Length: 337
Image 1 (cartoon, rainbow, N blue to C red):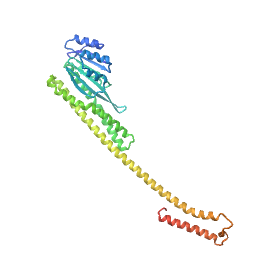
Image 2 (cartoon, one colour):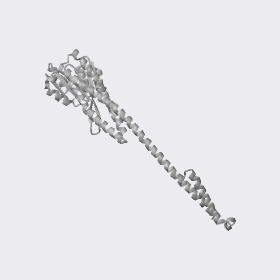
Image 3 (cartoon, rainbow, N blue to C red):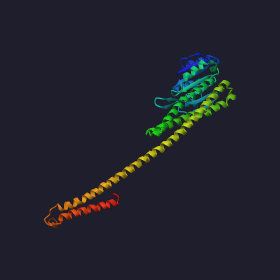
Image 4 (cartoon, rainbow, N blue to C red):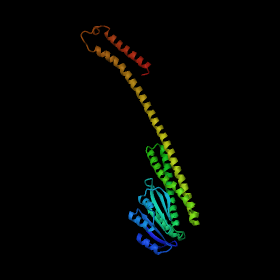
């Protein structure tokens, strides 16, 4: 248990030091409201709360297991709300999601957090500083929590927008790591979308029950303002996902163009290298011809008529020249030289 307090007419009248003491103080204060804050509670703590306030077992199971999607359900006089809070971690450029379960009854509010966000101590301090708002009861606390969760999305939106701007620069700069960054941010936007999109329908459902449950006009204005912010945030998140999809497509196109350019450069280099090899091979063949003739006549066997022939030496030189010229002409016609 993080904090527990009993309020009457918008002012704290008791700060019990445990769940049992809170239950007892609430029963002793007619017309009071208890606000209990739990952080990753044990099963025994949740069962104790459920027994005291007659909470539905399905809602308690959801609160124990966590990893729920945002939703709003009504069990008799108790409202069960699941919210996904978010905060932007600037150091690692990541979005951290937390889960918050809220039980709202006629004379109690129970919050069960499964993450660092949101900071409900700030919400409690804000409500205690405006007793006229807190005096409106558990609904006022619920709307304050909704407002805090939705306001917490604004820094995330700004951080993500900054990341997308940086990614666009990296894409056109040809950063090899940008594809991974796009993928990771896209995955976070899927989570962000799952956190914000259901809230639009949830708040519309709450607004639809204004007349039925006699919601105070001041709270109605608060909720409409929260609904406007949620709608704006949801639209921004949808825009982020679309932008990241487009950026990923552009990056794939640029990568393909770069690969094609590299392949073309390799092909041109290979062609130039092949031309050089052909020239070297042609000259090697031309130089090999006189070497072959000279090698044959350099063996100095006894029975070699040309060795004692007066025209033998000029004949050998002429033969070398004819072979070399013939090979040069052939290679030249074939563009090897």
